[in-house]
Image (cartoon, rainbow, N blue to C red; front, side, top):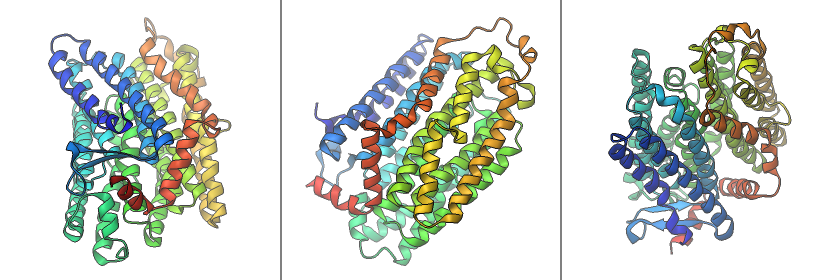
Length: 502
């Protein structure tokens, strides 16, 4: 099969799975988990095959219905979207596997897996869309599924968290839709490459400044950048544990960071004012998220604020915009996705066993739950930036990039936040993992460890511990280098896409 023809399967497979689960999930309880696991594995396989194809062929384009842009809708995979798809579908496959046993406590689990697949159809659609309105549609599909997943426990607090998330996310979507409307009125096209061609030489027009503000607010909220992060702590605390694992590892990266950077680097063109605004948001997120995390006694809330802080690192590298900084951000997207998904899975396993999210009531996890304990330790060490774990290398690259670009103050802040991260993780995880084991004895009586719960955490721990190897020659290294070129070259993306469409 031609690599171009594989692109729509990234949307078709999870979307078809969502509907098949509705049909067969009512008939037999395991059907939802089986179909979702197969679909997520197939999606990861397709994303892996596309990654190899990108290295060999360059940009891949599928014209939906055979119609030529700008009238037709293109689905585009370049090295940047290929990297994001690979990370997103890898995390999604493991979260799906982890969910199989975790959601057994709920009734109608087929609804959970159907929503999970619908969410991944939207996520993959955002990553491959070459049309700004279709990107918005896919983004809304993923968001709507997530609102329902956050409230899946059907408890009052979960419903409240879902409502808050839905309201704030709807505000962000409104900003985006207004921005798209103004952009279409100005350019008479929704194709991102043609938008970029139209506004070439007119990037400083007032309408573009207005649209940029709308998109910064909209995608900033989806990325949970401070001060747009208020929806995140409750959504991560009250939802089933696999949801913050996939949200932190996939959703905020694709719906927020990827969409934001794709538009501002490759379509609008990064300008100094936008760069300075992103630096401001990055610093506020890094410091604000870290300080708020330090005072938390709820493990999931701590991890949520930590995600806000780590997203700041990612945006900081993109905002600086040098090849080294962008490379650091891409590598940190990977490291944070792996480590934070691992930590949320670990937190979910602890909570399921201990019936609490209160850090003060959890102790001695390693002695009684060794798989959960040791894998969580690896995830925490990576997020804290302890060598030789992955988070150390990506943070170090970003700090060096700040120094290289002459932003010594930003380098100091990045280093300080890394120390702050180590402080609040040590404060929380040291007693949780190594504390007195007696407090776990009663809770763990008759507790049976589950292979499908442990295996995703083991895989993520191994990847997190060895992620420095991805800097060595290989598919991930090639993809990251090629993705860096795509972002750094900015609006050259427009001419590449237009040339490929002929």
